Image (cartoon, rainbow, N blue to C red):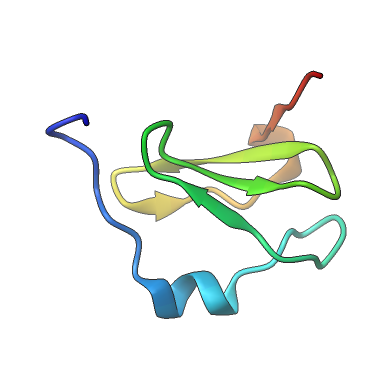
Length: 62
């Protein structure tokens, strides 16, 4: 595990949704991303702050 990995508050995860689908997100601690399975997007977490912009999200490939 990355020493610099920052934990995301579970209460924050309950509140955040994908801005595109309004669906639930899962947290990938290793990649420091919030994953929207429905939209197939991974939103980055930078310095502990989720970047919830579709334009900043990484497309998840099969």
